Length: 327
Length: 180
Image (cartoon, rainbow over all chains, first blue to last red; front, side, top):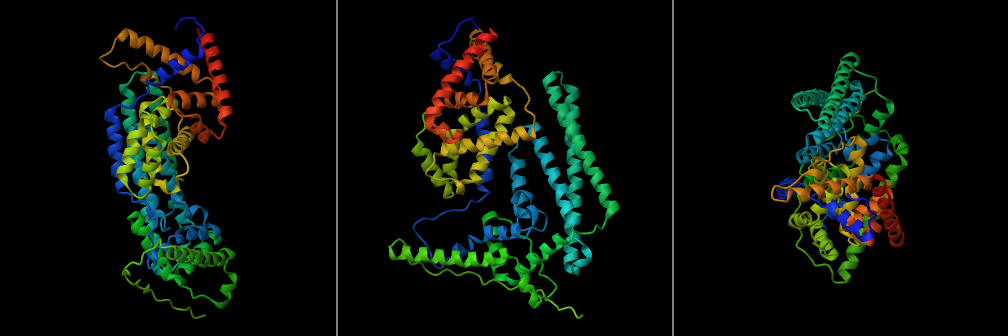
């Protein structure tokens, strides 16, 4: 550039022109859009129908329930299990977490971004396994123990697959490293290779650790929390099934069933129900009343039409038999 | 292309109802701006494309949280900014200025080379400015946003933004003079 002092106008024009160097190629734009539309069309989003309300639509009453269930899990100290991005195998939101991972992998284009994304997923796999190992198999019923074993084996398998994938990515970048001479590119590839080596080493140490220390001693609080959640689910079968249907229809995934608590509820247990649980029930009642009030108001204002009552399948009760222990 | 705020908001409301075609139109209208915003920061076209995809996917998944009283454009730019922050946290950005010197086949090589080199110098100078000056200059001149939209993104008043813009230009001018 010439040695001159630019005016504001000249500077603005040059800045606007500089911005033109970053443009999205039409073919790239088309490719991104095609991929995006494929993903979003397979990911249903919650719809809002304003103005028309079917007062026989019970799903409107269950819609606030999922956030309340999440609030309950958090209140009971369920760590990050309630958050979709860190759900563990067996948690209600785990299939949603898996779905999000699949979507993220599908939309990643560049090699470096794939490596970075995969590194994040590998960290989560190790966390999942750690959470599973915190459970004490001896305290579970036979059926639950089978489920737990299956989940643990599944998590170990996924960990092994994540190691293989990391090795494949490392090998790929090592091959590319040998083919390039550009310094900046070499640095990028070496960074990716080093990162993959770190991940592989940590994952292999983790697998060795599992073999040496199985089964671990579970933290008492973790097991108590899980029992409380299972008790809640057992005592609210219909509610759980409504939540299950809601999640399945919104996300198109099958929610794994959680087995009921095999131990009978003692009368004094009611006194030990956390305050959050009582608050949850009060909040549910308040929300139902609020929704009913809104519906009545809309009807009185003529905003609501009477609709034909829709048939919903009657939820089937859970058939697991609970036997009281004889002490 | 000048975008009507009400048209975008209208499409956003349709998309909220599950209309994927409306969301596709939103992509057509905003993808260039979002890409440019991200590419200017990360300087790598491939990473910018990834972040662009992630921004729109996040926008689709978060549509139920979008408030129709707010400009959809500024809302999605906020998402893009968060994606950028996440990217910086997880990945050290590599300096790749290939896009700056990329010259189309059917143009005057001499003119394009001169323009490309000048753009390179201006971008480099811009990236050395304090963060707030960079942000406002880029959003106003590169992304072509209005002060009201920038105010929505940054939380600063429009008057404050005008002052920052002017001071940013002064700083940039001095930086360019120092480098000559």
